[in-house]
Length: 433
Image 1 (cartoon, one colour):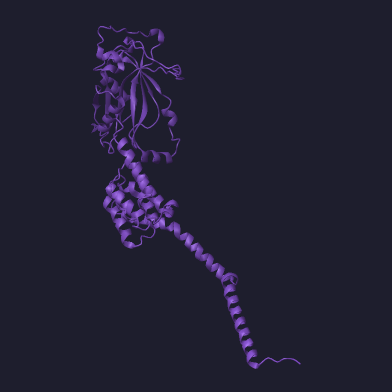
Image 2: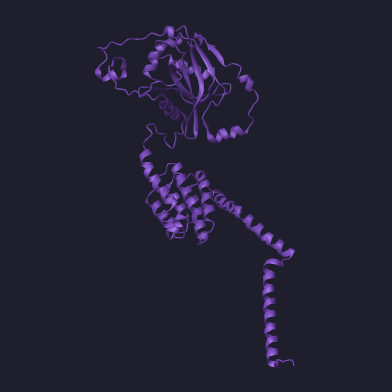
């Protein structure tokens, strides 16, 4: 005899079964809608969103560059650069996109002439949000908390280091507020503060940041730097000028600046009149981003069989000058058995340099005027033949921007072969008198 369940139990079981089926359908519908059931239109829409987000990233740098370009319409100055920084700080409280903005600002600083201003660097560091990137525990410090922002801060300090800018107390306070005491920018700051005072005045021949704008003053500074002799005398043989002739032709006279020391003058007086002297150049000299060119008056080296060794009288050499003449010093040097004095050095014998000059036009006529001016203090030049060895190259003041502009042009200009034909021309004695 079959056992029949009550109606209430059957109703409960049916409702429970229906409830479970409904939950299963709901869960199955939720699972399929999030991962499986995607139409082609949804995929295309999702790809368009990703494409829009990827294309939005490089545009941030473009917009920051546009900020500086708009500020540079009036004039590229410190005030306009600071105005851009203030505009970015007021635009968004959270300073979103500050890393890209700082990189763009570092690139634009030389154009605005603020690459050596410590106050501008401090304002640039002030763009970072405060107390956001500070690590809260040792684990965050160990895993380089916010590495992208720390690298950007280190880049700001590296640009300061490249331009020789010493950080101040405000710089340290900003770095501590932004990154904390134990961070990479703080370590970079500590290294700069340790090494910069040691190397600040280490160069005995410093070059000023602002070079003289007058070409004559720049030539004087350059020649005194090359000569490295306090007794050398700088002479301006000709100042730059121009006048109009009776025929209406304008004639321009370039500047000629020369230098010669008393030792060079005495060496030139002992030169053999039967052998020529040579005017060679131009030779480049870089002063920061400016390149100048100079010319030398030199002679060929004296053959060994014609060299005359002058013996100095020991009585004429005082004790204060004995270190300049080591042949009269008898010292018992105690050397170790492991000391080796054998060096592989190629001795190159060069001729004596009698004088140097700088001029605006590097042609033979202009350099002949320099030789004629040297005859006033060096009469032997009227008896010695002079050979001009002039090379093709930059003949006047050049800057980095000018050289880059010239390099984009045709590297083989017309008429180059004609200028390279006469490289050595003998200047006779009658032309100098």
